[in-house]
Image 1 (cartoon, helix red, strand yellow):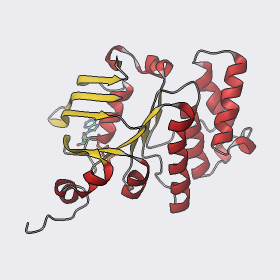
Image 2 (cartoon, rainbow, N blue to C red):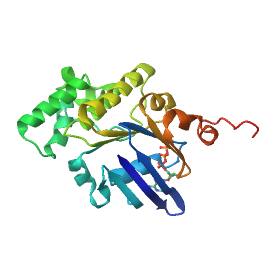
Image 3 (cartoon, rainbow, N blue to C red):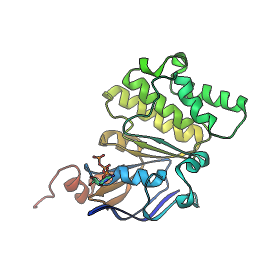
Image 4 (tube, helix red, strand yellow):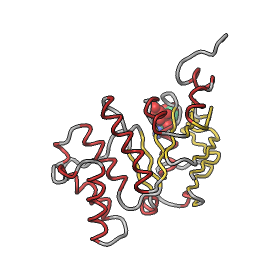
Length: 238
Ligand SMILES: Nc1ncnc2c1ncn2[C@@H]1O[C@H](COP(=O)(O)OP(=O)(O)OP(=O)(O)O)[C@@H](O)[C@H]1O
């Protein structure tokens, strides 16, 4: 279970998060909201890149005292809006550099790497330099990095950015399989509401740094406040 408790972040005069609390119990959950709502800020707090007041607990572990590096060793994996693939490394080496920083034997790591490439369909591209990958393969490589080293919490910031409908659908299937294959909980931000409603059982909606709804995704998307603030649909009679 992921618990966010009264998270508050201020950048000078801008309150990016304002006492945001939420509890995610499902294997895959989402965070949506308009531009500037505080979604990436929330991910940065969870990842340890930003300090906030409040608490982030996962399965009862308070992540607050852990540096980003320690969170990675603990099992946190992250994809950023702009994927973080090293162009001068092969696909396999992009995964290996992460595995090198994690515990485990060489044999375990080799098996882990092979499995991640297999699941993401990248085995045939293992030795290809990342500079030769297309946008989709880069996204897949980024996602494959989230599969290695016994992940416990996977946070994905707009993983389908720049992808077409069929690639997005396939990526959605892969995200769902992360939970099944690894047992990790996954938290996804995306502007693609169709993707979120298909893969996320539970969703938090932010607007101007505040929680405006949180719960079962279908119910949240029907919430008049969400429809007005995010989907741009005015409440009847408004
Ligand atoms: N490093 C920063 N310095 C100052 N203000 C920031 C910083 N990072 C974010 N903000 C501000 O905090 C607010 C929340 O930003 P955030 O990036 O979390 O929103 P978001 O919901 O992820 O938006 P988007 O969908 O556009 O990525 C915005 O008003 C943004 O301008």
